[in-house]
Length: 309
Image 1 (cartoon, rainbow, N blue to C red):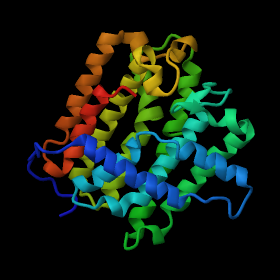
Image 2: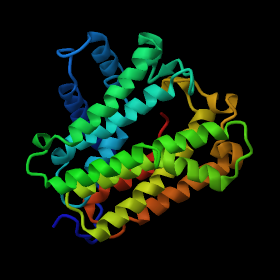
Image 3: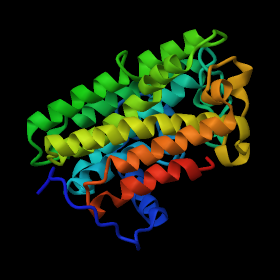
């Protein structure tokens, strides 16, 4: 039954590489189909939208959404529109983060950032368009036929909270204001629970809610999502210090150059790596009552420590 916790039964033959590849292809194909090609507006805005959204990326947020649905007995295909909406919101945030008024980055995913190609004005509008398109997709009942309307309403509200001033935007503001300031570890945790963790956590909750998760399962998955959100940010901070720019598709060392507060700056690289490992263990432990349906979520948590891009 969807939403019911089950006995842990790990499938030793599960391949994360194959799973991520399959799900990424599924998301990429759906995004290409959802995106307009300029039928009802100036062509440049559609070029800019597609330039940033279809360039690649790991698609972690939509994959987490689909994996959470599967963990509670649902089907990945049934939540695909919501998963794609989450990727649109993530991409909008990256376009805006790269702007000169924010992080002033020239490269993203191995090629010039949106504002470098289309100008700052079109880049801002492309981000705006992706954010609003995400909510059009979330609230289109025809995209998820048979889905109870109350579930669609619930996830639209939760995603709005996670993306706005209560979550990602609020965390970004706090992060900007903390640049060059003396910030303690608890404040840093609070920043990234909003800035990075909120959208990752709601990606998990979205898939689970749409698949009909029960309260106990949803609570466990929420714990998992919040924990991997922090682990993901710590791993990002470490990569910004010692990652390979060719693999990352962007420069490293930018956090230190801007005086940004990071986990390595406060804790050191080794302590940060150890803390990320603890968080991943906690995340996996939160899934102890789930069966092999949660194998992708367990593997993704461990992958956070191993990724190089």
